[in-house]
Length: 298
Image 1 (cartoon, one colour):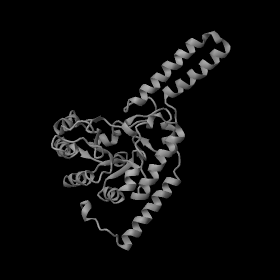
Image 2 (spheres, helix red, strand yellow; image 1 turned 135 degrees about the vertical axis):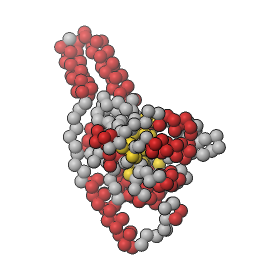
Image 3 (cartoon, helix red, strand yellow; image 1 turned 30 degrees about the vertical axis):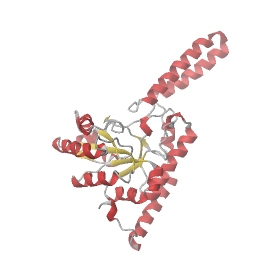
Image 4 (cartoon, rainbow, N blue to C red; image 1 turned 30 degrees about the horizontal axis):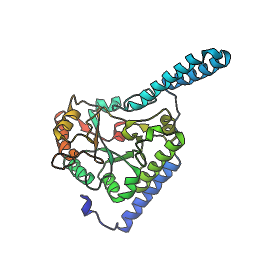
């Protein structure tokens, strides 16, 4: 159902059911049991290196240049890992679907940075035409601003996942307390509006730091990146965007597009609207089934 045909007022029974679902989702967020955090090998190595450097400088102060050099190199490696969206050096990270989903020849279409009142309804219509389900990584403040649209995404059978509350460009520069406030706020916003608590998190631009994984563990969220992307926030060539995403297309791929911040074609059309039908045609020709990330892990 297109957005403009949504009723302005919900019938009392429907409203009551949705309110109950939202209440259950908020309760789920509040009662989330943290999953165990297991430091990645690089994190354990970094901790050991810091301890050794401190001990070395206490026992032999003259070795401080070597200790400082080792710590600088270590922080450089940690920074590089955080700047690589598909890296697993800082913790678990979905770059492909799990083996059972691959065996079922499933693929995930993920759409970031919305909801956008101009673009998202048209994306939903394109997905409906081909009976395709997608995962929308949404920004909390935009969900709150466009509540009906966020609800429609879920009503049409798609998934809403956590893409932070504000989508700050400085996201990866913050410490654990700020990160938890930002991610938890989006978690509560999405649950309140849609009635579904997110299971996955994607960092803005995919950039992160060593503090993120412990926060995700406390909130029981799984980090998800992608197999490939087409930089469709900058590239307005729909053919190039579609070709970048369908190159070597295979089961288990996680593909990234944007309904929010979408680049425009020379004619002013959001590039996702022209690239998506071509991509969906290729997925069908390859005999693959698009599913949400949550469905893929079952």
